[in-house]
Amino acid sequence: MLEHAVETVDRDALAAAWAERRTIVGAWALSRLLVVAGALALHWTHAPHGYFGPSIFHRPLGALEAWDGIWYRLIADHGYLLVAGRQSDPAFFPLYPLLLKVAAATGLPLGVAGIVLSNLLFLAALLVFDVFGRDVVGPSVARRATILLAVFPTSYVCSMVYPESLLLLAFAAAGWLALRRRWVACAVAAALAALARPEGALLVLPIAAAAAARWRDADVDERARATAAVLAAPAAAMSFPLYLGWALHDPLAWTQAQHAWGRSFRANGVFLALTRGAHELGRQAWAGRDIGFCLLTLALLAVAWRLAVPRMWIALCALLVIVPLTSGSFESDARFGLVALPAYWGLASLVRGRRAFAALVGVSSALLLAATLTLPLVFP
Amino acid sequence: MRALGRFRFVATAAGIPLCIAALGVGLDAAAFDRPSASVSLAAGALRELAGLHAMRGSEISARRSVSSICVQGDFRHDGRITGGALVLLGDGTRLYDFGHGVRNYDGRLPTPVQRRRFQLAGCPLLLGDRLGSRLMKGVTAATATRADGGWAYGVRVGRSSALELFVTRRTLRPLALRLPGAGWSDLEPGADRVAIAEVRRAFGLARPEGRRRA
Image (cartoon, rainbow over all chains, first blue to last red):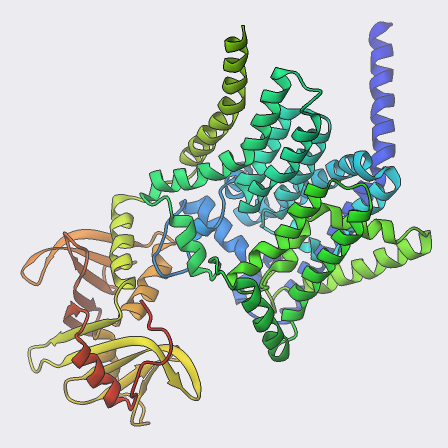
């Protein structure tokens, strides 16, 4: 009798949870269908040819394994190696290739395992982002923002062999857990973000702000856990140079590799990015994509500022698109801005009407498909 | 009591981040293969190559030995500043490569012999490109051998019949180069200012253009 009651409650809870989240799962499924359809279209038509070689077109979802995906697979296959003066793999942080290796243990080819992994992580990221948003901007804006993130034009990267889905999930989880004062879990999420990409270390800002806001009411134990959560992301980020020091006898291998990729800090980098950006725009229109999305992200963050979004989240997300400019280029800034979570809240707050929202989702979906179809022409 | 509370605070606040850092290193170490000694040696040899901007060469041949000097850098080419390599052979032949294959400065197509000599000149950047791309895929390796009368390492791409760069055991600096079907050349890293100026003059370049490649 009791067992039956528990089973009924479980089933009811599951049904309620599904009913609450099915819109998100639906948006995820439809948006991913668009990306996969785009990749299949590239496979069938072999056009546009762009920078892709025949081996990429040969595989049905080859386009989603391309660009940096090749490097992540190389790390999972062979580990790290610094080749001086050349682009090499210590430029890429270790968590995603590590998960890739685990996923490939199921028997799937590395590329396919990466695509499945990224898509599942993206679904998890959307679900957690929705929960986070409810606590920050309320359920209505949060839900619209989650759907807009699912169909955002640059979100095709979240279906590629890239760590952006993982980073989104870790960012959203760290933010939500910090709000809920679950500091140890927050520390773990922040550490995962910092192991996935270097910008994960910037989570120190919003977590520190959340810890400072609770400091007075907290007892010694909670203060200690909150401090640990603040320090978790930098500590995790530091573990990568330590590993490189052990494996390659060079703790600065990441910096050297970044230099070879043209990603080294310059004091006049932002100025260079702006002047070169204007010049690049004249030469090839693709430069406009990164510049446009950088400006759009900053504008949406300004909108989010007016909502009750924690200021340090705004600061973190502004840094996500501004710090890369210090290397003197806007290159890939559209992708770096993808994890600027408050920008989606800002965007959602602008489209309150159902028609306007539906129109925006439609336009964004069309751009998402177009971005996937033009993958051979320009890297994410 | 207060000391205990302080200890608990520090143990938690510092202990969790330290555990995270240790776990991060441990997971990476467990998950990823460390480069073998042979691959590390090959990477070290490429690091030495990357630090060079000029190379003197001397083709080893039973019939006739031709010296060469390769200078790398950023040069004005077709109205633009482009990275590339200039090779001046001892017989006065001027060859260059700006990323579109070997060209003859005189405008004629380079002969197969000239192409071979260009390769044997051992331009560091071009050698590094050739060896480096394969190194990351784990098909370049270094083995102990003898070259130029002394102990050396041979850095080889892929099969035993492929390009092989010999480097000194102690400093990993280039010693010699073997190309399948093309022969051998002795290499001497670097060149003095006079020699570099001579190459530049031969190619009609009065002064360096922009940054010289390290």
